[in-house]
Length: 188
Image 1: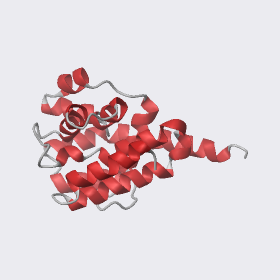
Image 2: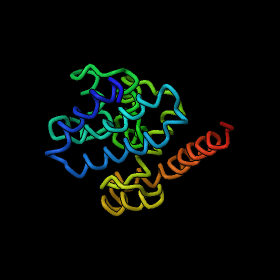
Image 3: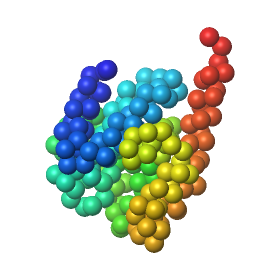
Image 4: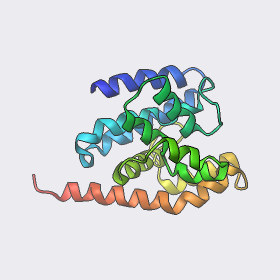
């Protein structure tokens, strides 16, 4: 583990493991997916793994202020934890967060406070999140979107957002898988 991941795991665990054990399992699974795609990330592999394990800390009851977990988590990382700016930005924008922010009337706040990282990193974090079940096991994005819709209800804010985001989630997954395949095709 790098210094960044050595810092990120205990922080995420301290915020999620006790109050939200299933969310902690999910976050560990998302980090596991990040490690699996590390070859396409080069020097940003550890950055992505740290963001992956931290991406849902905004659900922690101690951090939830707006009820929009990407924003709450990113603000905590920036204002309290003094986290790496790139990790903060990835957490703020994970998994098409701008679409949910728009539905909540928080898009200007999100985008005004936190710039987006490079598209390939946002794709990678979306891939990791949307290919991991709530229990931390591998899945696929179609089943994950269906699971989220079923859990929150199709007419809920989250259900509506995730269906709206589904084409971009699938496109992100496709782009990541294309990069993984290209790396595997490269001669040793």
